[in-house]
Image 1: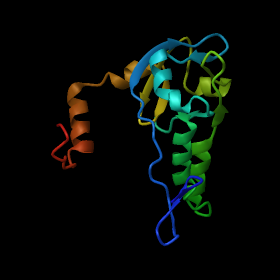
Image 2: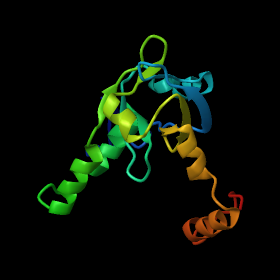
Image 3: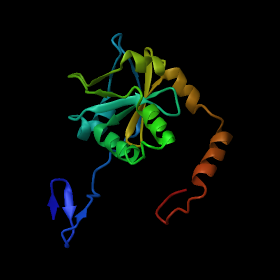
Image 4: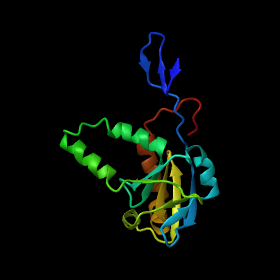
Length: 178
């Protein structure tokens, strides 16, 4: 039986619903930020975000790079479920939660499907006119164009070693390509 986003097994025991549709965003899109700090989403990205367009989005600083991350609310809720499982009475956990959520903004797309970037987040990512939107793993990274190009223009040998280190230990199923 399915009830209000929850399912129950035959013994009337609550079972968490596993069929939540997660977005699989892809693509790199170049665009410009206007003088008011707004970025118009490209048509190809809007199409992918269609299931999430009526909800709010979360905009935050990236943990590892000088870029921003735009989360559809459904994706953000999944991340925060993991973060909220941390024990706030453990100092490292509490420090992580504070730093992870620092500068987080709830944003809505305007009528022209633009995302407004606050001055503090714009400053963090050194955003100016030319922007790159890199969509992957359910989020959209927002980069200054030059910073993005520097981040992805790595030596092929270095990337090969990274790929081997990160993915080389996996044993692909018979359906996966190498």
